[in-house]
Length: 545
Image (tube, rainbow, N blue to C red; front, side):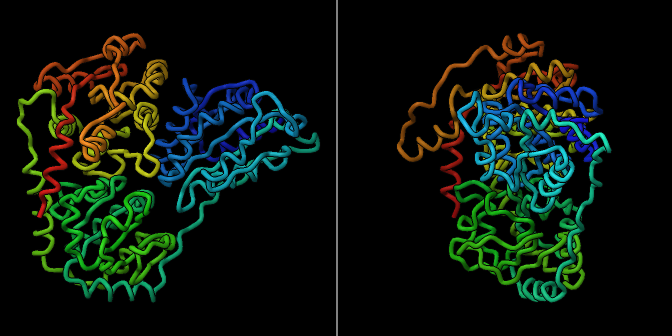
């Protein structure tokens, strides 16, 4: 048994179902070992697509997604998706090939220092030097990737080491999978948190990505409902509290002052649950540095002058919330009602003319929401549509609307939808993307067709980079270098063996979505969008008293 075969056995031991990647010369041994394993290798059309698939797999499953490449250009192509997982706290293990040890000391074909390249964007990375270390390296990579706070790790397997066989005297076995148990919160800190919250007049819960990562949404719901505390979500925490719940204040995340920002301005105590600064900086919601902050998370708070704690409670979020909530009495419902009214009434005033064409973002969101069940999955790309979806797409469950927010990399939607459909074949999946982001990884439509994965790609088409145009118009009063032309998306989809649709009137999208969701193959819907609504939104938000 050689190193590559040992590594694949270790991946099987970790419960890996899919490896996303591309074959190459230097990973030939690893590819052969995968061919003889229980793991399904998903051959992608670009390594970036493979990394994004592993990224979304990790978000949805809580288990490390695995992506694989050869050396050199294969490894560099993985980077964007790996960084996305690193900054969004997603468990991911990247495996790259490398030149053989006997040529790494000199200039060599396709050989670069991959370890140094991955070091700043992973929690841990290593190069395998001999077959005996494979089990420890693989177990460590998965343990670190999946341990709070999760993130990306990386293993490099040189070509000659992959071929190295074990000693004839014995075999090398994978290590047992052991998951650390999160510690209980300190009783003293729990008591301090109780006193801090008890003294509040206008408390608000700021729910972050860590609530979803920690599977603590049920505990967060119990806590909020029992104490009647309103909840505002970061973009990546959508669905922690159902948006239909009268305590939900929807999301916060726009740079502009939004309706939820008004409520946070009025709050005196902010209970930050699983909150990461990379999601939405404290300086944007604690401008005057006057909030009393109760930090509840698995790890200490980052240092920030706008995030000075009154108390921090570290440990299992579920235990922390249950222990704190058990000792508090409910707050008067009037504060939560006023907070909810501020947000709901603000959004109600934004409803556009139903017959306007091209469709405004609010109408696209309404038609999409009506077409889907609460547990269906939307994977949202990055662009102007992301801001609209993150802000206004109602969610009843966590992980039902996937948002790339820390690194905010364009091109995640189509690869991410493939991963979502592989994990949840019984759920309907929609990739929501702009025309810019779609063409960055649209080649993965071939992967979806080849794997017989039916999902819908909904393209918000404005023939340009919409969010940059928005920013340019606000700052300079004009736009530059953001316009482009597009292919015929219907014919483009059909060339892959998918089905293509085009909305041609304001009443088209709803029936097209209904039909597309029943197709046995991937479908693409070309939907023109009126992004003049971006400026109108900015004007409305600036007018908030």
